[in-house]
Amino acid sequence: MTLLPMKRILLKLSGEVLMGNQEYGIDPAYVARLAEEVKAAKETGLEICLVIGGGNIFRGVAGAARGLDRTTGDYMGMLATVMNALAMQNALEQAGVETRVQSAIPMSSVCEPYIRRRAERHLAKGRVVIFAAGTGNPFFTTDTGAALRAAEMNCDALLKGTSVDGVYERDPKLFPEARRFDTITYGQVLSDNLKVMDATAVALARENDIPIIVFSIREKGNVARVLAGDGVQTIVQA
Ligand code: UDP
Image (cartoon, rainbow, N blue to C red; front, side, top):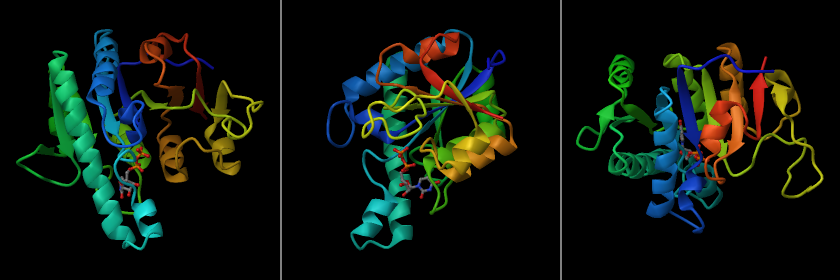
């Protein structure tokens, strides 16, 4: 399966990739490296939307397991994604890329609220738009936020940059001989409960026919390789 030419993409980065080699938080040097990748992708003429997770700082489920109210934990997780978005904005602007952060939870002294038409204007002006705070609702994830924004913004693909280089039949960290899929259908991901993105995100991508490209962001230059069609990745499609 090959991808059609793309004009606009949404790149989702897990919060954990912002840690670099740290155990927690944000490594500014590593975020700068990620920003260079986004800049290179933008220089190919693509319009770029970004969604960044918050798992490097806080996850609602983890908080709930330790006694925190789940909803409160989820709001804390969403706030964590705003911090990550600001770190990425800072790195992109230091690299000379104009950006805007739009948050699903309004916080007007920090960033813009999410307004789709305004995001369109930013993209038309060549800015990278970073969508923060996921969907703005507890019990969701930033993967679902990414699928939602990709649909709203009519993105041609949802790129998921993570620490694994694609979708495997079994967890490659536990089963080193596990096979990686080059392509896989949304249906198989859902029926086999494969760990790509949560089911809500995959279902939303399927309903809106948005291919999901899963690749490793840990290897330098991979965003460009994947976009050029010669990367190591899994494409989730119909
Ligand atoms: N979150 C939420 N609603 C959303 C997006 C995120 O409640 O729409 C919360 C949730 O607690 C989640 C945390 O924010 O665990 C961080 O997001 P996520 O786990 O998706 O980050 P990632 O795994 O991509 O780093």
